[in-house]
Amino acid sequence: MDKVADNSRAERFEVAFNRIHQELRKLVKDENQSFSNLVYKGSKSYTIVRQYQSELQQFSRLRNAIVHERYELGEYIAEPNEKTVSRIEKIAKVLSQPNHALTIATKEVIIFDYADSLEKLVTGINNHSYSQYPVYREDSCVGVITAKLVVKWMAANLVNSKVDLSKFTVGDVFNADDSHPIAFVSKSKNIFELEEIFEEAHLAKQDLEGVIITENGRQDEKPLGIVTPWDLIEIDYKLD
Image 1 (cartoon, rainbow, N blue to C red):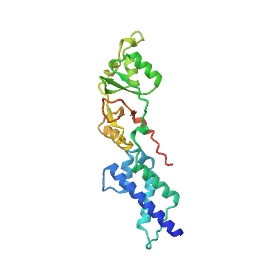
Image 2: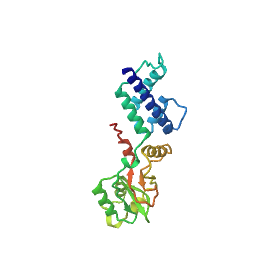
Image 3: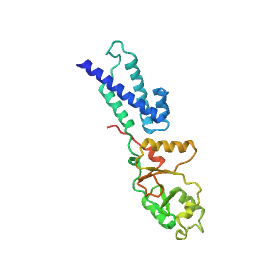
Image 4: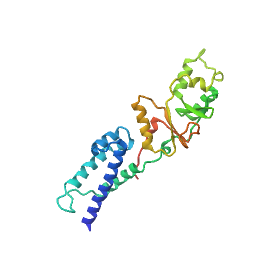
């Protein structure tokens, strides 16, 4: 019975390993790379691969021992224990069933209209302490305004060490910066697809300020959530 159980664990390990290998090929978009190379490349763009990179490399070595070093039919030179098998199965599940992007998004999205007063914007920043705020003009999002940009604009527009907030609008601050790189995705997108968007922007030397999640990924829809680069850094894949 013990030998049967050992063989079963080895087979479960192989199945989970193959699932991970398949998902890594999809993420890295390369069918011909070895498992180790896929892990290395995947770790550059995807948080989960980076988080479990060391374990995945260990799984690769164990898998080679299981598959290539059998000394008799049905016999294995290396046998994974239940803890190891359970662990690789959980990682395989997370890779093959990624969470939706909304799970890591800030869902209380504070928006401002292009015509709103600067006073309203500053009060909102003080009350909510977020770093990005989507700006809408004629019911369509034209980008985000950052707390950093507001501070920079106010510093450049001081008169006698003061700024008359009632005289200016959100649009005045928004127009002080020519670039407002932002992307829109539907609520059906998953975390891996979101990470790809940020990676593509990085490769294009574009500092994406955030990704706004809407029902269908359109600019004329109200935001359901917003994801910033910091949200990706703070992703923590916990395996129960």
